[in-house]
Every structure is written in structure tokens, then in C-alpha cells.
Image (cartoon, rainbow, N blue to C red; front, side, top):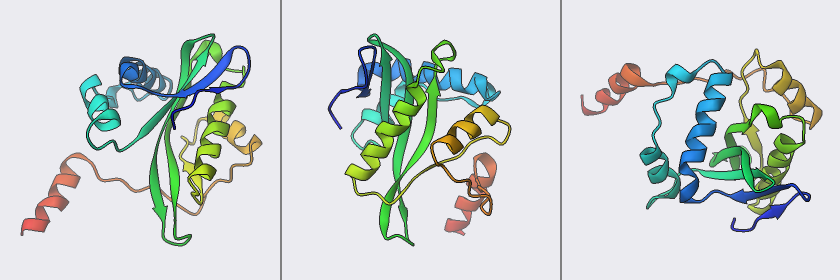
Amino acid sequence: MTDVKIINDRLSIRPAAIDDVPVILNFVRELAIYEKLLHEVVATEALFAEHLFGERPVAEVIIAEWEAKPVGFALFFHNFSTFLGRPGIYLEDLFVMTDMRGKGIGKALLTHLAAITRERQCGRLEWSVLDWNEPAIQFYRSIGAVPMDDWTVQRLTGEALDALAAQQSS
């Protein structure tokens, strides 16, 4: 994923580079503000540099630029479907700056990510959306996304994660 994709005379999408780490962290913070979750952001530029561009990258980022200025991003990584027997792509975050919404940037990011999904012969592209984020839900429906209503995300973090991991040595 090294090519810049020109969408139109104003919009392009490109893979992020290590110099983009401050921009990525800023986008994450802006997304967290929108989602009312800024208090949960503990990520740092150093962590992003290590995990996105270090010795063993675990996620990738594409940047949308409007007139050569970063205005949005998508952060994603591979997962695997045992049912399909193929990898998939999980979209962790998609964000477009508030004043740039409505210009097709979010759709362009998703379209680009769908093309990456197909190029890599992945079986699916999936993501989560907050239940209250009606504008996003309506947008996702408009592009053909289907809700997985029978599934509930489960998560272990902090003390619960530590406690379960500690049972390994017991």
C-alpha cells in the first residue's frame, strides 16, 4: 500500500508515514471528543510510532487529504474468519474533521479500504459503531453495510485482563 489515490482535484488518499503520527493522534483525540470518550485516550505519539511503524506493525492507517491537507483517516488491521478460512480487515477508527464532512471524504476512505480488502483477497470488511451515532449508522446503511444485531462485543481490559492473565501462572 504505497500509492497515493487521487479521488478528484481536491481529494486524495495515501498511506500514513511515521511523520503523520502527530496528525493521527490528533484525529484520534478529535474522534474521542465526538464520541464523548476523550477521558479514555491514553495513546501517545511514541506508542503509535512503535505499533504503526515499528519493527512489528500491527495496524495501518490511510490519510485523506483535501487540497494536500490531512482531513481524515482510517486505522485498520487484519483479523481472520475461521468460517470463511480467509483474512478480513477490521476498521478500528474512521474520522473526518467536522468542517470537512459532507464532501464524500468518509465514503472515499471506506471505498479505498474496500479496494484494499479485495486486493488482499480478504473475505470481509467490518467495524463497530456506537448505538447512538445515528448519522454514521445511516451512512453505513447507505453503502450497503449490514448490522450484526445477533452479536455483542465482549472486552477485557485493566484489572479484569490482568486477573485472567494471572491465572495462566496459577
